[in-house]
Image (cartoon, rainbow, N blue to C red):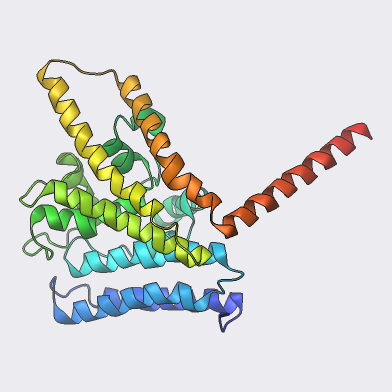
Length: 310
């Protein structure tokens, strides 16, 4: 079924829906965490976030846009609405606009604009894994796609660790930078009650489900559970890492950082090859893109060779 609007109209409608949702949440931001009105507004915004990319953009022609808006709105913006309802940080007024960029390059452009013009202090979306990923926990928590890891942390991991979904009391709606500082001081992990292992597993299961949903939004089909399995597997790997590091520490053994980083990246690539990359080859849409890209590279090579011979 084709979308009822033209592409410019769909983009305008998406922006209008996002701005309207943000304005509604902002109007309710002074309500106490867990307030029924705030919950109703957040639920309506989340429902709109999931519906808008699928209803407004043609699945036959707007694959990239559907994927981008599903990632930015259905996942990231919805997690912010949920966090606001739960008293887990204020709604970042400009975060949703920044999330319209698509991962590294686009977000870096928006960051370059936002920093000098708006005076915002923004965190990078990626950090170099070849220097900082000394284990799978560090890779996912400090290096890779930090917007998604933060979304999972505030909406799934921390509530389960703390044993409560709604955070109440003084400081419940502390500014985002103060919340980030507390997390950094605590080593990036909430330690009050709850089951950290269960929270870790639930976080990666949520991430796997959202990746499958985004793939369905882009290509009209999932990876048949391969991406879900890839992310679900990360929790056991992180738990195994913790036990291994603790066991080695008891024996006075501390592996060199370069060795830990190399082992981490090799392990992740070994798992990603069958569970993340290979399933893409079975998605017809991406197969067509690969063929198209190869033809473009071939044409560019022939043009360059012809220019040299001439």
